[in-house]
Image (cartoon, rainbow, N blue to C red; front, side, top):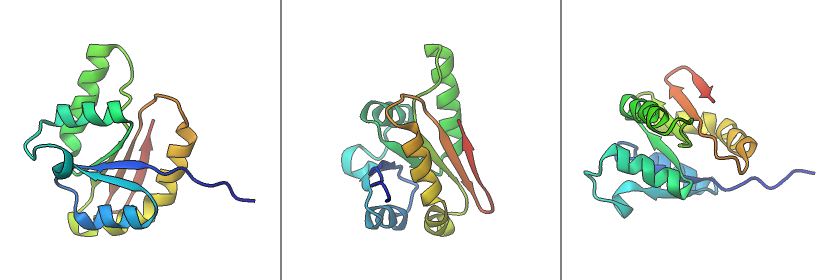
Length: 133
C-alpha cells in the first residue's frame, strides 16, 4: 500500500521559467511565483525570509546570492538556516527537464524532513543532482 505524498509549497524566484512552475503544478504541488506576491525588485534576503516564514521551498537560479544569505543567517543566528531551496545551477532552457528528473528525490527529501525546521538545499546542475543537509 502506498502512502499519499505531501504537497510541496514551492516559491519560484524571478529567474525561474514558467515552464518549471507549470510542471510542478501539473505534478500536484502548489507554486507561488515571486511576481505574483512581491515586487520584482525584492531583495534576496526578503525572499529568503518570506520562504522561511511561510515554509515554502525556494527555487532559484541565483545560486551564489542564496548561498551567501544562508551563510550570513547561520553566523547572525547561531543556527543552521531553516530555508529549504533548490538551486538550479543548470542552463535555464533545461531547468524543467532537470526538475522532472529530480522531482521524486525532492519529494522524498521533503517527506524525510517532516515537521523538522531544518533547512536543506538541492543543487541541480546540467549533469548532477546533489543534496546538501
